[in-house]
Length: 328
Image 1 (cartoon, one colour):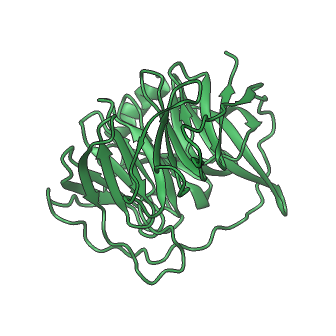
Image 2: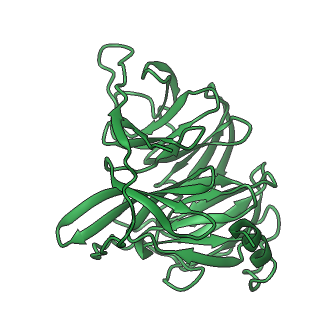
């Protein structure tokens, strides 16, 4: 039985999820509170994992005018036409910046809409979704920047010293539903209908199965398996579309971002092989076996994206953007 077939079988066997919340109702209060400070646990890289052998090339971004300047790029996404969508935090450019494959700015928008821009994703219809890690607001835009939908996830603690205390990422289910990783304070996943009505939620802070310590990234594959990068617990957890726990993988690092590719899963993570040594690392995980099939030291990423075909990835680092090419 293949891994995908096994996943389908497990979907029908795992224990029941938390009770669903009625459509249109706000999720019940959760015991999240202020996010804890990140830890620096030493994790030895797994032995016997081959190097990916990829090449890293900077994609220079061309300033469209004098005084224009990128800040820290938090996340990146790519559409089917080859355009690249950047979500950045500087005040000398719009938060959402769209560039072509040569790094030329095509359009931009979003000034005044964000406090801490965090993630950006493209849905199957080509619309653009973003999260704000401070306000916990999720926004949906048309590709040209018209706001189509606004979701206020809510339950954001107000007495935290940390700026990041809200939603972290968005994923899209085959049923048209939207899944939001509400990662920094509430440590949960909230499912919405396509028009923004709450369906259910699951998760709370902890280290047991189905619990999270900063669910930082979320993706959903073609058979409906939900993958959540449980960053501070150093694992990727897997769920059904209705929140039933399937299992977990430990890629030997803190997973910041996960991106789907044909037959595999890319994990951008931080590895601490020794005290005071931090190695931004890119790993490829076999979705059928859960094993790491290759890894390489890469630019310090936060919000990577796989280009069509799965052999090239976009990795932001600071105010720069890199293309990582992986041989077949």
